[in-house]
Image (cartoon, rainbow, N blue to C red; front, side):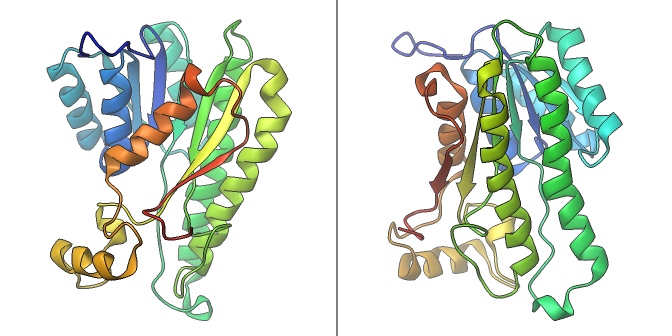
Length: 259
């Protein structure tokens, strides 16, 4: 799964990735597998998770699908338990699961949409951190956790995304606080904040991929949106031993939008 010139950074390590059934989460899972990790893919829909597992296995990797709702403590605790039971440890966790409910001014956002974003984007990360840290602190090798935040939040705001930005700002701050709480236990915690990425979430209503590309050429300093592989590369750096002294950072990957 790797070339002779590249030494795998995650050989024999176990990595859990939430929201791994598609998009950024799937790309992160595949990238970690390509560098030797055993992968536990977590999400609410079994079908897409099994597709991710099949893609990993096709290239010789090892993977396990665990359907779970990250907003339920018992679900994410069970996913961590399954990781250890199946592969023997939990060395890396990527908390990527998230939802966007917006497009309208804050005063017009439904309470249901507000609560959904809060439960998945904030409470889901909080519960995942608790379950992951509880396991990692029992291991002599500790572990590394990367939370997926967003440029919407502490870095920038856009009309129609106030609630989403509030939840992602919370992820960034939660990351920094947790990093300080647990670094002395050998657990490094960081965040990646993607901007517009080549996924459906970055498409405006009625916009095609070609429309988005045209808009990006005119509005983004790089002239294009980021790829999921570029976001994954940032995650793998922070989770790897290449970043052993990087603690509590929020790494922006946004084609220069917030430069």
